[in-house]
Length: 484
Ligand code: SAH
Ligand code: SF4
Ligand code: F3S
View 1: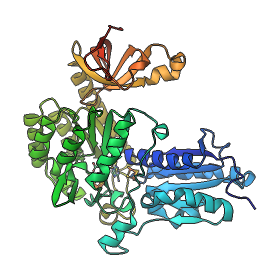
View 2: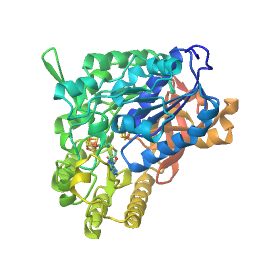
View 3: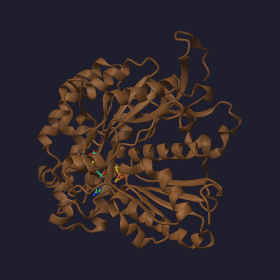
């Protein structure tokens, strides 16, 4: 019999889905590294193969089921391999995963991730399948269901993080908004805010470890609410408390829910220079009938009022959005209303998705998915083209201006061409306070510091420029020579 210790401890992990999943994978990998595992990019070499999955659209699920299909034969020659499916699809499909892919050893939902190391060991020693999922939303009282979804936020060690300067920090799990098209309230369970004391302890530790920028994560971060010692904490309070941590230079927060974008929150952001001037507040659609059918809880008029509040309080903030095209019954005229909304608000960028019917959602049971795929595709492309044109036009306003960038490291191009290998100066990338990507030449030692870049050219996604000067964060006030 194989024991848990006589395997090669090589771990392959594939992650799809949102930032919440990226954070979950990071934490699972850290826990396994603590037990001696090493990451490998080669699935054939790995004795442990994990998929952290997403169910938000059918395509994301197909991708994982095909990857699992490919492993079926390799497992015949490598019976010691342990294959695990984690995350949203694990919570949603549960036993069905074993039926569709009998060579899978463990299925672990979003609310049970702390169980992963133990379940891997058990699968390896006993060869029995492991299933750890939370309760379905109708399987118990709200309290029972909520407590079956455990937020997985162990404290991280510096060497376990992919970036030493940036980190996600979860402030909420789950969602109670129940937009009719969306599977997330099922896969992530009831909305639960984490205690501020835990969030702050985690952020302080990350700051001591060198983190300069935190991104607070939640499905609707601006709905954050937690009562601690008689005080009600909202997102604004968290932003203020984290701003007090000297090492933290920037605080981002995604995703925002339009209805909860209050004036108080906007005023708080204005008073806090470290809070990002970037608001991701998905509109989803430009037509009131569609918004009602989606049960988004606001009208276009209310969204417009929110945008007016943002422009009034935070005129420099960049706003980005998500849109769904081809939702049930969407007419050409209704689609054009979404197009008009993009023209009206000129979002910094928009994530555009073709509607994908999700079993178990209200929309799947109430409305037929009746827009043909080629129409969805055409509407998607039309919208993308419009948004890209607007993004490029608005980016062009930065030409000649100087922006402050938090340097993230070598650009994708530098990494692809191998230019980064000698660690000398090369093409770097970073982001502005309003989340615009900036590419410029400089010394990689600048990673994790703020640099000033003068913009000379733009595309719809990127600003290009030359560095002007930079300040060393460790010795405030000392200006190093011009490098460009
Ligand atoms: N909590 C975030 C979004 C989570 S899902 C929010 O409410 O803004 C990310 C995006 O996926 C959504 O904003 C929506 O645009 C898209 N999406 C969700 N369900 C979808 C579906 N069934 N088909 C297509 N797109 C979907
Ligand atoms: Fe899904 Fe709506 Fe919740 Fe966002 S707010 S996760 S779209 S149900
Ligand atoms: Fe997907 Fe789950 Fe995120 S369904 S989008 S991975 S919350």
